[in-house]
Image 1 (tube, helix red, strand yellow):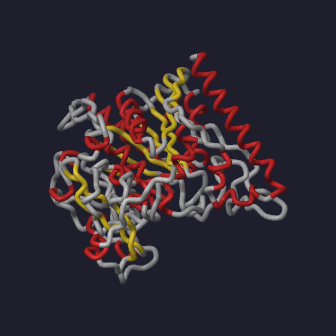
Image 2 (cartoon, rainbow over the protein chains, first blue to last red; image 1 turned 180 degrees about the vertical axis):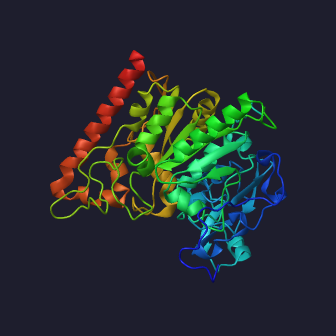
Image 3 (cartoon, each protein chain N blue to C red; image 1 turned 90 degrees about the vertical axis):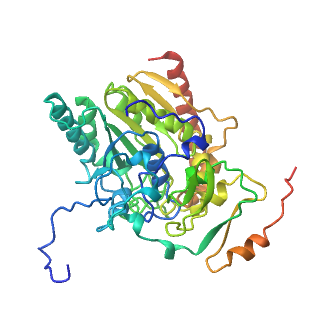
Length: 131
Length: 318
């Protein structure tokens, strides 16, 4: 594309999400799909993050609120269980932390450089509800 | 393929394989992709999709990437709905002539558009699709502003909101004209189903989408989509804002069947004052100055009147 002039671009473009034929997309999980390099699944927006969500599975009740409200398909849920956060596609918006209903929350935001294991070891204790 | 996907609870819903990919360029905390995911995950059928120009289109189809795992087309600002309607007409013609390789797959035709591409620019095209009775679904991601181009007012922008072409300042309180009632306009085409949805009420949303996909004929869906950039709130508060919008009845959730039978599908247990909804957003900040306080009162009266109107229509079934 480097040597094309201003009037030499393709007028229309067609991108294929998958390499080869795919029969049933709705029945194929992401890890089983054969993505082509044109799918944004192969790209990453990890450098957008200032804060990252850290998942502590000890407190998770698998309610899946974070899964349904995640705008970036970054909450990985398999067999009705929350497994973790997809750090390639997470933009660090913090919605998952806001909608987490457990006490203490099983997802919390930490600075991007924070060490996950130390943060999980120092997880905040249960908060008393104000009456 | 064509039987309805069973979604009893959120755990069951979470086993869906997403057909919308991450690493799109929507802002962190954008509600657009939450709505798109809930719509696409509501069905297991094949999908033929389009998106009119707007945030969703420019952010999900950045050459050489695409975030869609289904047939998807973008043409212009105004004709996302007609592009899908054309695909639907073509599909029907090929089916009639027996030239489809897999005639029993029954794909669903859905077009996505922002409020600019539906309320203003694509209005005539959508109206045409509804009138011709194509078997399509048009989903509006209503963020009440042209967010993609820098926050110009659209005819969905509500009174008092500050936008770049209707800014609040010394001489004006911002937008002066009321929001267009698009659901009612579309329902008066006599289409089989039109509804207003919100992403925080995912069950209500999935139910409406499945109903819309099951009926034969055009379907119009208006979804509230809080915009962190133009409504000016923190990205993490998207769902809180949507909760406020539905609980303060600014965005009542209802459906209109066959253009006359109106059902209210969500009645908040505790109705929140509109003031709280306005206070959560930077675009209404100026309304809390003394000289503009009367506008908040007017807002509340307008919302109450609309709620009373919806209730009366639900009772009357006309």
